[in-house]
Amino acid sequence: MSKRFYITTAIDYVNGQPHLGHAYEKVIADVIARSRRALGEEVFFLTGLDEHGQKVQQAAQADGKSAQAYCDELAVSWQSFVTKLGLTNDDFIRTTQPRHKEVVQAILTKLHAEGHFYQAPRDGFYSTKEETFVTEKERLPDGTFPASYGEVVQLSETNWYFKLGAHQQWLIDHIEANPAFIQPDYRRNEVLGFLKHNTLEDLCISRPAARLTWGIPIPFDPAYVTYVWFDALVNYISVPAALGDSTVCGATNAQLSLWPADLHVIGKDIIKFHAVYWPIMLKAMNLPLPRQLLVHGWWQKDGEKISKSTGNIVDPVAIIDDWGLDAFRFYVVRELDIGPDGNWTDAGFAARYQAELANGLGNLVNRSLSMLKRYRNGVVPARHDELAPVAAQAAADTVAHLRASELQKALHSLWTLVTRANQYVDQTAPFKLAKDPAQAARLDEVLYNLVESCRVLAVLLNPFIPGTSAKIYAQLNLPGPADQFALAAWGGLPPGQTIGEPAALFPRRDAPKA
Ligand code: MSP
Image (cartoon, rainbow, N blue to C red; front, side, top):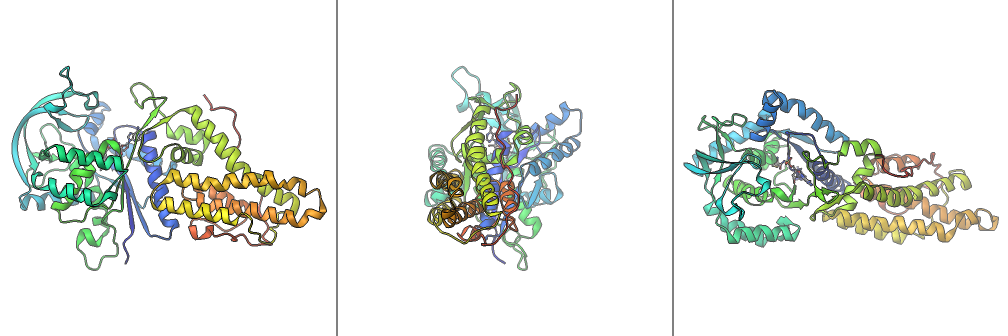
């Protein structure tokens, strides 16, 4: 039994409908998961829902439903969202599932028994939106708290705390010794800066059941439920535990090896939970730390924060229904590198669709296959290797970038082949060659190079736009799926093969629909 490449996303709060930010994160994780499988690795890809906490309890109350009924209803649409995005997740966690709650309680019991927790009173300010106490340090000059905290109320209550004092230095050492642990580098530096210039406050891991019932009961004190972040982070190991993962369960006859996670894909806003609290929780449990936190930036729309209340949203489902799943997947990965913030504009989306998908890739595949159909009755001529070096370089660079989770760079590399092959059509002018019987051999060469380039592209594009990859393979009349990078080696198209019917992959469109 070998360890699988274990990749996770953040689990989304079920207090509304999915938006662009959620879709982006899930798509990048899916592209990485598919890339790893295409490299021949065994993968386990986990995503899911974070269902507890005050935010969800309040949203359910506002909807006049019990919290469980509210979550159950919304979970259906979130799960269909996963299908809509074409995700290849191996499991879907809901933190209200018994398999998860049991693990959270077992961990709490163990850490309590080992003396990691204590109970103490606290007077302070509390943000429900962020489910956290806010400190005086965070007050703005005008005495208010930053808007990101939402409503801040004064609270006086006794809670359970997790002692963090002993953990600060080893965590700094770990992050310094393992540059890959937090990526990109500037996020790593942010975390290091925070840890070096602040003393960690102990983490409040409980909420009184008197004000919050929607949580996992603290097993050693029924007056409390578990703090939603302590509950949520555990999802990354509760699923492996439920499936019998050897590292998490300590089982000797385990069928599965997942933990430690190879990659936690998360947004920049939740880095502290993943880079500080989660490693400390794991250390206290004597479990290995995840290998990498890959931290992405945030999307805005038209230069403004995406916000339901102002109506400034991008509905990924509407975009997918209108433009197709692959157009959406391609755009988000191509437009925004993993790290910085991005800006969605409908015009930018339409422009990329037209230039890169319709005129770039789509046109290449359509004209290459159509010419083979017209000039050679759809029969693949003898192998010829004129574009082989370009294709080999594109494949090598694409794969190297994918190994490093550099998705945007991988698309750049891949596109060198799209661009070169389109240029090749213009330079070799097969439509002119076809008119001159003396050029028949040259036309064969050109057609082989073009159609084989399309096939190689189908393989390399598979993790990004699997539907398009399948369509190209189907049009070539080849058995799919083209989901192993080994298939990108030049010469995979057998001479004598009769291709199928060419059809536009990305129909040209005038302007985005209103
Ligand atoms: N439930 C927590 C995560 C727990 S993980 C153990 C949470 N949920 S969330 O629904 O608010 O956010 C889920 C993910 O979506 C986060 O990684 C967050 O950064 C990401 N995004 C939310 N809005 C976003 C954008 N506008 N742009 C990009 N990603 C964004 O936090």
